[in-house]
Image 1 (cartoon, rainbow, N blue to C red):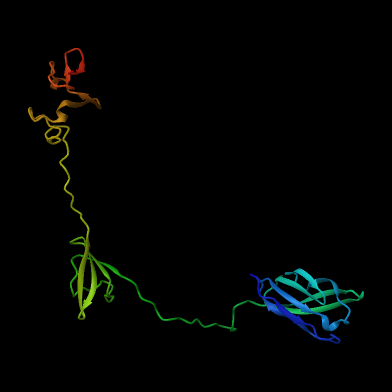
Image 2: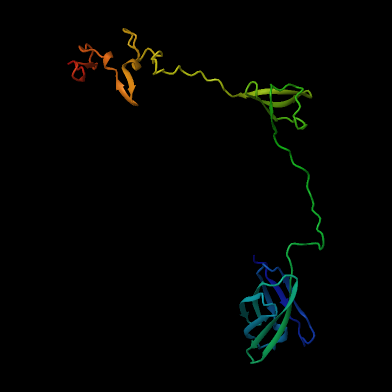
Length: 255
């Protein structure tokens, strides 16, 4: 991440024994700085070039930009909990070459207190809706197996009626309102017994005159569906009727 730019004002006069500090930075932080060097220069002198090297080999110095009597640079990386010197070589228009050493500390960011930092907990939020299962429909005396208190909006699923009930309190009395039921009983149509042909497909498929089922005309032989030829007439009377003349099975067409 990139932090705001910090300004460093180098004082006038001799810097022998003077420690010029750079604001600390995190080991994973890219931090930019402006260094004001004008107090060390004659009125008509200015900076033409700057190079830099850090004592901590994990510190990278980039984006050095000269702006008249000041310059800008960025520090990245660094060894945590280590103080490092950063040496700048400053070339001036007058031909002088100056050396300036600044000091930067690499610290973890975001810790406002050393040692064991206390954890501050807020108030507990709403516990949310609970759902329980019951062998029977819930009553005002219902108590969850886990001993929890029943709150408004809690739900019980009754396994006896396959229904959902929602809790509410009326005049401090627990009541349950049935909201939904699950249909578990399905009445299915009687299947066709192809082995005995005892069940018909219904009036649509039945031959109401002869009371025959569609399945009466078919049989399964050697795993294959076949027509029961004995059920076919040799002299068809209906348009589209299948018939068997002894030599072949045909379809009767009536114009």
